[in-house]
Image 1 (cartoon, rainbow, N blue to C red):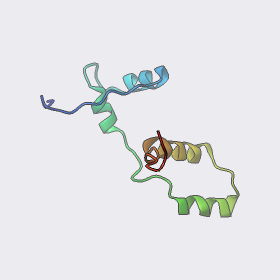
Image 2 (cartoon, rainbow, N blue to C red; image 1 turned 90 degrees about the vertical axis):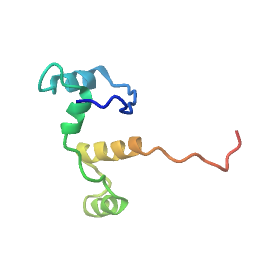
Image 3 (cartoon, helix red, strand yellow; image 1 turned 60 degrees about the vertical axis):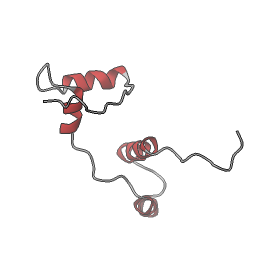
Length: 87
């Protein structure tokens, strides 16, 4: 049952992502929130130390999975506002 006072957030998805999310529903009336909450997410992202170790072992070449992890971390945490800039 959904809480009547549940906070919500509007997001934009690529059509392909929307279709994958829609197909992941277990039943037609399952909410997208429920689908997302069922998903398994890594406990934490790639750390700078782990990235440095990978570079030391393998050079600067990253796998597609590692690049996706870096991009996800970058997207999830935008840089803080520059309080020193004008305007």
